[in-house]
Length: 259
Image 1 (cartoon, rainbow, N blue to C red):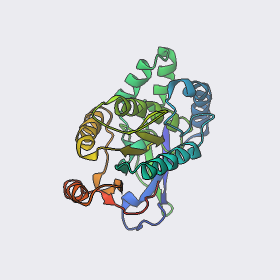
Image 2: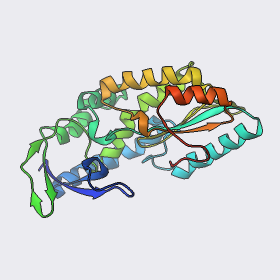
Image 3: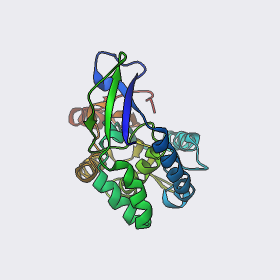
């Protein structure tokens, strides 16, 4: 029941000659999907009270446009007040596929879910396996040791719970500076694994940010790809921008970025 058939969908605009440019979708037994959907239906109503407002992905009652509108307002305020800053769109490597199961269980425990419910979730990750379907041929079965399956109705809900500790650490880190407004400090917005940050002092905020990401990755297997992280400078002096460009091999933009 826990063996999946993985089909691959090419990512738009990416060369189909590299495996990394395909999105794996797990086709599961109907029994397993019904079981996962049952758990997802029980979990979803709890998410608005567990996940902070910065996360709009897969939380009932929230929409992607909420964060998009908020960041447009932040950018407008930065331009009107001549505030300098750096807009960063992090790029995680195979975020869903890398999630460590031990970390996942720990997060569920810390959120206070009953042991019986956690065990019901972890049953989906009890020695699962998969085969890859390519050009009409199935590969040999192989065991899966970490990650949440793309195509499973429970996976995105588990993932945003697993990512919430990272979001909270970024919000609470005094060394990582966001834009101060009458409504509070704004640092980040999330849609599932897509993380967008606004840093007003990038010279001093970036080192603690990446230390935090490294520490989080050590326990969760989350891995940010610096070279694919998009960066958009806002009102940053030329000398400071040159220094940042030399230190951080981001995908630098001058007028806009894709989120």
